[in-house]
Amino acid sequence: GFKKSDIRELSNHEFFMPGMVDTHIHAPQYSFTGTRVDLPLLQWLTTYTFPTEDKYKDSDFAEEVYTRVVRRTLKNGTTTACYFATIYTDTSLLLAEIIDKFGQRAFVGKVCMDMNDTVPQYKEITANSVQETERFVKELLEKKYPRVQPVITPRFGPSCSEDLLCALGDLAQACDLHVQSHISENEEELKLVEDMFPAYQNYTELYDKNKLLTSKTVMAHACYLSEEELKLFSLRGAAISHCPNSNFSLRSGVLNVRKVLKHNVKLGLGTDVAGGYSASMLDAIRKAIMASNSLQINKVNERGLTLEEAFQLATLGGSQALGLDDVIGNFEVGKEFDALLINTKASDSPFDLFSSDNLYANDCFDHVISGDDRNISEVYVAGKQVVPFSSSV
Figure 1 (cartoon, rainbow, N blue to C red):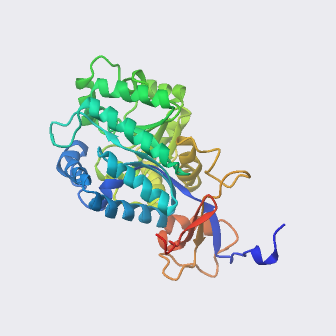
Figure 2 (cartoon, rainbow, N blue to C red):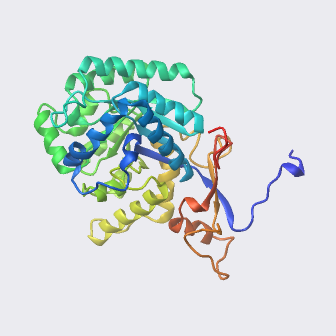
Protein backbone atom coordinates (compact mmCIF):
# COMPACT_ATOMS: atom_id res chain seq x y z
CA GLY A 1 0.00 0.00 0.00
CA PHE A 2 0.84 3.68 0.10
CA LYS A 3 2.01 5.73 3.04
CA LYS A 4 -0.33 8.60 3.89
CA SER A 5 2.47 11.02 3.01
CA ASP A 6 2.64 9.58 -0.54
CA ILE A 7 -0.98 10.39 -1.30
CA ARG A 8 -1.77 13.72 -2.92
CA GLU A 9 -5.35 14.90 -2.90
CA LEU A 10 -6.55 17.09 -5.75
CA SER A 11 -8.92 19.98 -5.12
CA ASN A 12 -12.39 19.83 -6.63
CA HIS A 13 -11.36 22.13 -9.49
CA GLU A 14 -8.45 19.92 -10.55
CA PHE A 15 -8.44 16.67 -12.51
CA PHE A 16 -6.11 14.46 -14.52
CA MET A 17 -6.66 13.80 -18.20
CA PRO A 18 -4.63 11.58 -20.55
CA GLY A 19 -1.71 13.23 -22.33
CA MET A 20 -2.46 14.38 -25.87
CA VAL A 21 -0.94 12.83 -28.99
CA ASP A 22 0.05 15.09 -31.91
CA THR A 23 0.19 12.72 -34.88
CA HIS A 24 1.60 15.29 -37.32
CA ILE A 25 3.90 18.26 -36.64
CA HIS A 26 6.82 19.84 -38.54
CA ALA A 27 9.43 20.86 -35.94
CA PRO A 28 11.51 23.14 -38.24
CA GLN A 29 8.44 25.11 -39.31
CA TYR A 30 7.86 26.17 -35.71
CA SER A 31 10.13 29.16 -36.42
CA PHE A 32 7.34 30.78 -38.47
CA THR A 33 4.24 29.48 -36.68
CA GLY A 34 1.35 31.91 -36.67
CA THR A 35 2.52 33.71 -39.80
CA ARG A 36 2.61 33.07 -43.56
CA VAL A 37 -0.70 31.31 -44.08
CA ASP A 38 -1.61 33.47 -47.09
CA LEU A 39 -0.85 30.97 -49.86
CA PRO A 40 -2.20 27.56 -50.91
CA LEU A 41 -0.10 24.47 -50.16
CA LEU A 42 2.28 24.14 -53.12
CA GLN A 43 3.04 27.88 -53.32
CA TRP A 44 3.36 27.99 -49.52
CA LEU A 45 5.97 25.22 -49.61
CA THR A 46 8.00 26.99 -52.32
CA THR A 47 7.80 30.49 -50.88
CA TYR A 48 8.18 29.87 -47.15
CA THR A 49 8.73 26.27 -46.10
CA PHE A 50 11.54 24.94 -48.26
CA PRO A 51 13.73 28.07 -47.82
CA THR A 52 13.17 27.89 -44.04
CA GLU A 53 13.92 24.17 -43.77
CA ASP A 54 17.13 24.71 -45.76
CA LYS A 55 18.48 26.75 -42.81
CA TYR A 56 18.63 23.63 -40.65
CA LYS A 57 22.11 22.75 -41.88
CA ASP A 58 23.06 25.20 -39.12
CA SER A 59 23.06 23.28 -35.84
CA ASP A 60 22.89 26.41 -33.64
CA PHE A 61 19.74 27.60 -35.41
CA ALA A 62 18.29 24.07 -35.28
CA GLU A 63 19.03 23.71 -31.57
CA GLU A 64 17.23 26.95 -30.70
CA VAL A 65 14.08 26.20 -32.71
CA TYR A 66 13.92 22.52 -31.78
CA THR A 67 14.35 23.28 -28.08
CA ARG A 68 11.52 25.81 -28.26
CA VAL A 69 9.10 23.56 -30.14
CA VAL A 70 9.59 20.68 -27.70
CA ARG A 71 9.13 22.99 -24.71
CA ARG A 72 6.06 24.60 -26.28
CA THR A 73 4.34 21.35 -27.21
CA LEU A 74 5.00 19.80 -23.78
CA LYS A 75 3.69 22.93 -22.05
CA ASN A 76 0.56 22.61 -24.18
CA GLY A 77 0.02 19.03 -23.06
CA THR A 78 1.47 17.09 -26.01
CA THR A 79 3.03 14.09 -24.29
CA THR A 80 3.58 12.25 -27.61
CA ALA A 81 4.43 13.81 -30.98
CA CYS A 82 5.17 12.50 -34.46
CA TYR A 83 7.71 14.96 -35.89
CA PHE A 84 8.95 15.74 -39.36
CA ALA A 85 12.47 17.22 -39.19
CA THR A 86 14.36 18.20 -42.41
CA ILE A 87 16.56 16.51 -45.02
CA TYR A 88 19.62 17.16 -42.82
CA THR A 89 20.53 14.05 -40.83
CA ASP A 90 22.69 15.55 -38.10
CA THR A 91 20.22 18.19 -36.99
CA SER A 92 17.39 15.64 -37.23
CA LEU A 93 19.36 13.52 -34.75
CA LEU A 94 19.75 16.67 -32.63
CA LEU A 95 15.95 17.00 -32.52
CA ALA A 96 15.71 13.44 -31.16
CA GLU A 97 18.34 14.24 -28.52
CA ILE A 98 16.43 17.35 -27.38
CA ILE A 99 13.13 15.44 -27.19
CA ASP A 100 14.79 12.76 -25.04
CA LYS A 101 16.31 15.40 -22.76
CA PHE A 102 12.89 16.97 -22.11
CA GLY A 103 11.25 13.57 -21.61
CA GLN A 104 8.67 13.73 -24.39
CA ARG A 105 7.54 10.57 -26.18
CA ALA A 106 8.06 10.87 -29.94
CA PHE A 107 8.70 9.60 -33.41
CA VAL A 108 11.25 11.62 -35.41
CA GLY A 109 11.68 11.47 -39.18
CA LYS A 110 14.52 12.71 -41.35
CA VAL A 111 12.65 14.05 -44.38
CA CYS A 112 13.37 12.39 -47.75
CA MET A 113 12.94 14.28 -51.02
CA ASP A 114 14.85 13.95 -54.28
CA MET A 115 12.61 16.16 -56.43
CA ASN A 116 12.23 19.92 -55.99
CA ASP A 117 12.37 22.09 -59.09
CA THR A 118 11.05 25.16 -57.28
CA VAL A 119 13.78 25.36 -54.60
CA PRO A 120 16.48 23.13 -56.15
CA GLN A 121 19.02 23.63 -53.36
CA TYR A 122 16.62 21.90 -50.96
CA LYS A 123 16.61 18.33 -52.22
CA GLU A 124 18.78 15.20 -52.13
CA ILE A 125 20.28 12.81 -54.63
CA THR A 126 18.19 9.63 -54.48
CA ALA A 127 21.00 7.31 -53.31
CA ASN A 128 22.13 9.85 -50.70
CA SER A 129 18.61 10.21 -49.34
CA VAL A 130 18.37 6.46 -48.78
CA GLN A 131 21.90 6.22 -47.36
CA GLU A 132 21.33 9.13 -44.97
CA THR A 133 18.01 7.69 -43.84
CA GLU A 134 19.75 4.40 -43.06
CA ARG A 135 22.37 6.34 -41.07
CA PHE A 136 19.67 8.33 -39.28
CA VAL A 137 17.80 5.16 -38.26
CA LYS A 138 20.96 3.35 -37.20
CA GLU A 139 22.36 6.22 -35.12
CA LEU A 140 19.03 7.01 -33.48
CA LEU A 141 18.44 3.38 -32.49
CA GLU A 142 22.01 3.15 -31.14
CA LYS A 143 21.22 6.00 -28.72
CA LYS A 144 18.68 3.69 -27.04
CA TYR A 145 16.43 6.59 -26.06
CA PRO A 146 13.59 5.01 -24.04
CA ARG A 147 10.73 6.83 -25.78
CA VAL A 148 12.08 8.32 -29.04
CA GLN A 149 11.86 6.23 -32.21
CA PRO A 150 12.73 6.80 -35.88
CA VAL A 151 10.05 7.00 -38.57
CA ILE A 152 10.59 6.67 -42.33
CA THR A 153 9.53 10.01 -43.84
CA PRO A 154 9.10 10.53 -47.58
CA ARG A 155 7.82 14.11 -47.74
CA PHE A 156 4.96 13.48 -50.18
CA GLY A 157 4.36 12.20 -53.70
CA PRO A 158 5.45 15.35 -55.58
CA SER A 159 8.82 15.47 -53.76
CA CYS A 160 9.80 11.84 -54.30
CA SER A 161 10.81 9.73 -57.29
CA GLU A 162 9.43 6.23 -57.63
CA ASP A 163 12.95 4.89 -56.96
CA LEU A 164 13.12 6.75 -53.66
CA LEU A 165 9.66 5.62 -52.54
CA CYS A 166 10.52 2.02 -53.44
CA ALA A 167 13.83 2.10 -51.51
CA LEU A 168 12.19 3.67 -48.45
CA GLY A 169 9.43 1.06 -48.52
CA ASP A 170 12.04 -1.70 -48.61
CA LEU A 171 13.89 -0.09 -45.67
CA ALA A 172 10.70 0.29 -43.62
CA GLN A 173 9.84 -3.35 -44.27
CA ALA A 174 13.35 -4.69 -43.58
CA CYS A 175 13.68 -2.80 -40.28
CA ASP A 176 9.99 -2.99 -39.28
CA LEU A 177 9.76 0.80 -38.98
CA HIS A 178 6.93 3.29 -38.78
CA VAL A 179 6.17 5.44 -41.84
CA GLN A 180 4.74 8.97 -42.10
CA SER A 181 3.92 11.19 -45.06
CA HIS A 182 1.18 13.38 -46.56
CA ILE A 183 -1.67 12.34 -48.85
CA SER A 184 -4.45 14.15 -50.73
CA GLU A 185 -4.04 17.43 -48.86
CA ASN A 186 -5.21 19.71 -51.64
CA GLU A 187 -6.61 19.35 -55.15
CA GLU A 188 -3.62 20.86 -56.94
CA GLU A 189 -1.31 18.35 -55.22
CA LEU A 190 -3.67 15.52 -56.18
CA LYS A 191 -3.58 16.55 -59.86
CA LEU A 192 0.22 16.81 -59.74
CA VAL A 193 0.51 13.25 -58.41
CA GLU A 194 -1.82 11.98 -61.14
CA ASP A 195 0.36 13.64 -63.79
CA MET A 196 3.66 12.47 -62.27
CA PHE A 197 2.64 8.86 -61.61
CA PRO A 198 0.17 7.87 -64.36
CA ALA A 199 0.82 4.14 -63.86
CA TYR A 200 -0.90 4.22 -60.46
CA GLN A 201 -4.67 4.20 -60.06
CA ASN A 202 -4.59 6.76 -57.26
CA TYR A 203 -2.42 8.47 -54.63
CA THR A 204 -2.95 5.70 -52.07
CA GLU A 205 -1.81 3.04 -54.50
CA LEU A 206 1.43 4.99 -55.06
CA TYR A 207 2.32 4.45 -51.40
CA ASP A 208 0.81 0.98 -51.17
CA LYS A 209 2.64 -0.50 -54.15
CA ASN A 210 5.92 0.85 -52.74
CA LYS A 211 5.35 -0.85 -49.33
CA LEU A 212 4.72 2.44 -47.54
CA LEU A 213 1.08 1.81 -46.59
CA THR A 214 1.25 -0.53 -43.61
CA SER A 215 -0.20 -0.97 -40.13
CA LYS A 216 2.66 1.29 -38.96
CA THR A 217 1.84 4.13 -41.37
CA VAL A 218 0.25 7.48 -40.53
CA MET A 219 -0.70 9.78 -43.43
CA ALA A 220 -1.59 13.42 -42.85
CA HIS A 221 -4.66 15.19 -44.28
CA ALA A 222 -6.40 12.69 -46.63
CA CYS A 223 -9.09 15.26 -47.50
CA TYR A 224 -9.84 13.82 -50.94
CA LEU A 225 -9.52 10.05 -50.55
CA SER A 226 -12.07 7.98 -52.48
CA GLU A 227 -14.12 5.17 -50.91
CA GLU A 228 -11.78 2.73 -52.65
CA GLU A 229 -8.73 4.38 -51.07
CA LEU A 230 -10.30 4.40 -47.61
CA LYS A 231 -11.01 0.67 -47.99
CA LEU A 232 -7.33 0.11 -48.78
CA PHE A 233 -6.31 2.15 -45.71
CA SER A 234 -8.59 -0.03 -43.60
CA LEU A 235 -7.30 -3.24 -45.19
CA ARG A 236 -3.67 -2.29 -44.53
CA GLY A 237 -4.37 -0.98 -41.03
CA ALA A 238 -2.88 2.41 -41.98
CA ALA A 239 -3.85 5.55 -40.07
CA ILE A 240 -4.82 9.12 -40.94
CA SER A 241 -3.78 12.28 -39.10
CA HIS A 242 -6.59 14.85 -39.25
CA CYS A 243 -5.09 18.38 -39.32
CA PRO A 244 -8.09 20.74 -39.34
CA ASN A 245 -6.25 23.97 -38.45
CA SER A 246 -3.89 23.58 -41.39
CA ASN A 247 -6.66 22.39 -43.70
CA PHE A 248 -8.54 25.62 -43.02
CA SER A 249 -5.52 27.96 -42.82
CA LEU A 250 -4.12 26.93 -46.20
CA ARG A 251 -7.66 26.43 -47.56
CA SER A 252 -6.78 22.87 -48.53
CA GLY A 253 -10.01 20.99 -47.82
CA VAL A 254 -12.16 19.46 -45.08
CA LEU A 255 -11.68 15.87 -43.97
CA ASN A 256 -14.96 14.01 -43.48
CA VAL A 257 -14.16 12.33 -40.16
CA ARG A 258 -17.47 10.43 -40.04
CA LYS A 259 -16.67 8.84 -43.42
CA VAL A 260 -13.16 7.85 -42.28
CA LEU A 261 -14.48 6.26 -39.08
CA LYS A 262 -17.26 4.48 -41.01
CA HIS A 263 -14.50 2.71 -42.94
CA ASN A 264 -12.81 1.67 -39.66
CA VAL A 265 -9.65 3.61 -40.47
CA LYS A 266 -7.50 4.56 -37.48
CA LEU A 267 -7.64 8.32 -36.93
CA GLY A 268 -5.74 10.81 -34.77
CA LEU A 269 -5.38 14.60 -34.69
CA GLY A 270 -2.39 16.71 -35.71
CA THR A 271 -1.47 20.37 -35.27
CA ASP A 272 0.51 20.36 -38.55
CA VAL A 273 2.66 23.26 -37.41
CA ALA A 274 3.19 25.56 -39.30
CA GLY A 275 0.44 25.10 -41.88
CA GLY A 276 -1.54 24.98 -38.65
CA TYR A 277 -0.90 28.19 -36.71
CA SER A 278 -1.16 26.64 -33.23
CA ALA A 279 1.04 24.07 -31.50
CA SER A 280 -1.81 23.24 -29.11
CA MET A 281 -3.73 20.00 -29.36
CA LEU A 282 -6.60 21.69 -27.52
CA ASP A 283 -6.80 23.94 -30.58
CA ALA A 284 -6.80 20.83 -32.79
CA ILE A 285 -9.77 19.48 -30.79
CA ARG A 286 -11.67 22.75 -31.26
CA LYS A 287 -10.89 22.92 -34.99
CA ALA A 288 -11.88 19.26 -35.49
CA ILE A 289 -15.31 20.08 -34.03
CA MET A 290 -15.62 23.18 -36.26
CA ALA A 291 -14.61 21.22 -39.38
CA SER A 292 -17.20 18.60 -38.54
CA ASN A 293 -19.84 21.28 -37.87
CA SER A 294 -19.14 22.82 -41.28
CA LEU A 295 -19.97 19.49 -42.95
CA GLN A 296 -23.19 19.28 -40.97
CA ILE A 297 -24.13 22.87 -41.91
CA ASN A 298 -23.55 22.02 -45.57
CA LYS A 299 -25.74 18.90 -45.21
CA VAL A 300 -22.82 16.53 -45.99
CA ASN A 301 -23.31 14.75 -42.66
CA GLU A 302 -26.31 14.51 -40.36
CA ARG A 303 -24.31 15.33 -37.25
CA GLY A 304 -20.98 16.76 -36.20
CA LEU A 305 -18.38 15.47 -33.75
CA THR A 306 -19.09 15.80 -30.04
CA LEU A 307 -16.43 17.16 -27.68
CA GLU A 308 -16.01 13.64 -26.28
CA GLU A 309 -15.39 12.21 -29.75
CA ALA A 310 -12.87 14.91 -30.66
CA PHE A 311 -11.16 14.49 -27.28
CA GLN A 312 -10.83 10.76 -27.93
CA LEU A 313 -9.18 11.47 -31.32
CA ALA A 314 -6.58 13.64 -29.53
CA THR A 315 -5.75 10.92 -26.99
CA LEU A 316 -6.66 7.27 -27.61
CA GLY A 317 -7.19 7.84 -31.34
CA GLY A 318 -3.71 9.29 -31.67
CA SER A 319 -2.18 6.42 -29.73
CA GLN A 320 -3.94 3.94 -32.02
CA ALA A 321 -2.73 5.83 -35.12
CA LEU A 322 0.86 5.56 -33.88
CA GLY A 323 0.55 1.95 -32.70
CA LEU A 324 1.02 2.92 -29.05
CA ASP A 325 -2.47 2.17 -27.73
CA ASP A 326 -1.18 -0.75 -25.65
CA VAL A 327 1.08 1.73 -23.82
CA ILE A 328 -0.75 5.10 -23.73
CA GLY A 329 -3.98 6.84 -24.75
CA ASN A 330 -6.08 6.50 -21.60
CA PHE A 331 -5.82 5.45 -17.96
CA GLU A 332 -6.43 1.73 -18.38
CA VAL A 333 -4.66 -0.41 -15.78
CA GLY A 334 -1.24 -1.47 -17.06
CA LYS A 335 -0.65 1.52 -19.35
CA GLU A 336 2.03 4.12 -18.72
CA PHE A 337 1.00 7.33 -16.95
CA ASP A 338 1.07 10.03 -19.63
CA ALA A 339 -1.11 12.65 -18.02
CA LEU A 340 -1.98 16.32 -17.66
CA LEU A 341 -3.05 17.90 -14.41
CA ILE A 342 -5.78 20.38 -15.33
CA ASN A 343 -6.56 23.32 -13.06
CA THR A 344 -9.83 24.96 -14.05
CA LYS A 345 -9.20 27.75 -11.51
CA ALA A 346 -5.65 28.66 -12.60
CA SER A 347 -4.96 32.29 -11.62
CA ASP A 348 -4.66 33.42 -15.25
CA SER A 349 -7.21 30.96 -16.67
CA PRO A 350 -8.82 32.08 -19.95
CA PHE A 351 -12.30 31.20 -18.63
CA ASP A 352 -14.26 31.78 -15.43
CA LEU A 353 -16.01 29.32 -13.13
CA PHE A 354 -19.22 30.22 -11.35
CA SER A 355 -20.72 29.09 -8.08
CA SER A 356 -23.49 27.35 -10.02
CA ASP A 357 -20.96 25.13 -11.85
CA ASN A 358 -21.07 21.54 -10.67
CA LEU A 359 -17.35 20.92 -10.28
CA TYR A 360 -17.79 17.20 -9.69
CA ALA A 361 -19.72 16.57 -12.90
CA ASN A 362 -18.76 17.05 -16.53
CA ASP A 363 -18.51 20.84 -16.18
CA CYS A 364 -14.79 20.58 -15.43
CA PHE A 365 -14.17 18.51 -18.54
CA ASP A 366 -16.40 20.69 -20.73
CA HIS A 367 -14.25 23.69 -19.84
CA VAL A 368 -11.30 22.02 -21.60
CA ILE A 369 -12.73 23.37 -24.84
CA SER A 370 -12.14 26.92 -23.56
CA GLY A 371 -8.80 26.19 -21.93
CA ASP A 372 -5.18 26.47 -22.95
CA ASP A 373 -1.71 25.86 -21.54
CA ARG A 374 -2.49 28.11 -18.54
CA ASN A 375 -4.86 25.41 -17.30
CA ILE A 376 -2.23 22.66 -17.66
CA SER A 377 -0.33 22.91 -14.39
CA GLU A 378 1.66 19.67 -14.63
CA VAL A 379 2.60 17.23 -17.40
CA TYR A 380 3.72 13.61 -16.88
CA VAL A 381 5.27 11.18 -19.37
CA ALA A 382 5.62 7.55 -18.27
CA GLY A 383 5.01 8.63 -14.68
CA LYS A 384 7.78 11.25 -14.68
CA GLN A 385 6.88 14.90 -14.24
CA VAL A 386 8.22 16.86 -17.25
CA VAL A 387 6.33 20.16 -16.77
CA PRO A 388 7.07 22.43 -14.94
CA PHE A 389 10.51 22.01 -16.53
CA SER A 390 13.35 20.92 -14.26
CA SER A 391 16.37 23.16 -13.85
CA SER A 392 18.49 20.57 -15.70
CA VAL A 393 16.79 21.40 -19.02
